[in-house]
Image 1 (cartoon, rainbow, N blue to C red):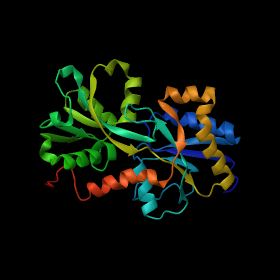
Image 2 (tube, rainbow, N blue to C red):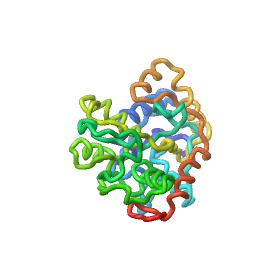
Image 3 (cartoon, rainbow, N blue to C red):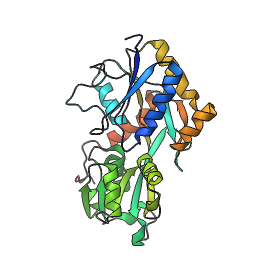
Image 4 (cartoon, rainbow, N blue to C red):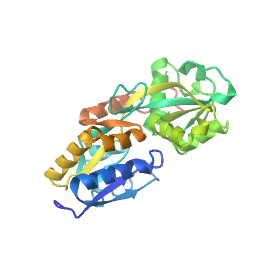
Length: 281
C-alpha cells in the first residue's frame, strides 16, 4: 500500500477527546497530502483490544490515535506494521511545561465546600475510577499511594465508573467524593460544559504521563510518513491552523521517540501486581 488512494485515520480516544480534534487533523492532512481521507471511530476501547485483530494487521487504518498503554502492548506483542509517528501533540496544562505529556487531575465537587489542599486530605473518601488498568484513572493513583506508604484502603470506598466522563458525572451527582480524571478529558469537558466550571475543583495533579501516540501503519511509504510527520510538526507555524489547534487546547506537535513511553513503563514497574484492592506495605 505504498500509494493509497485514501488516507484512513482511526481514533480510539473519543468521546473523551472530542471527535472534532481528529476531524481537524484529517482536514489538515488532506490539504497537506492531497489525499482524500476518512475517519473511523471506536469508542468502546481506548486502543485495539487484545482479544481482537488490530487495524494494522488487518490493514484497515493508515494512522491511529490510541492510548499509550495500547500502543505499548502492540509493541510488546511484536505486532507487525506498527510504527510510532515521531510527532505527538502538546496539550496545555499548568504542570505540562510544553512537553507531550498529560496528568491525572484529582477532582472533587467544589459545591460541597470541602477544604482539600493535598492528596492526603482525600483519605477516607469515596473514590471513582474509570477502569482498573487505566493509567490516569487508576495506576498513577496506585503509584502515588505506594510512594506515600499507603494502600488502597486509603480510600473509604471505590467505585468503578466505566469512563472518565462517567466519573465526572459521579462527582457532579455527589455519588463519589473524588475521581482521577485524564487532564485533557477534564479540560475538554469543562470547555463544552462551562456551567460546571464552578462545580468541579482540582485538588492536585499526578504525573506526568506520556501523551497518546500517533501510530503509523508501516505499509505507508517512507515519503508519505515523512511528509505527514513534518506537516504535524509544522502545523503550529501556520496561523490559520495554529488558531484551530489552540481552540482544542493543543499548543503544537513536537518531536518524540520511544523513550517518551519510559514514563509509563517505569510506572508499570512500580505498580506491578498491584490493584486498587491490594495491600502492599
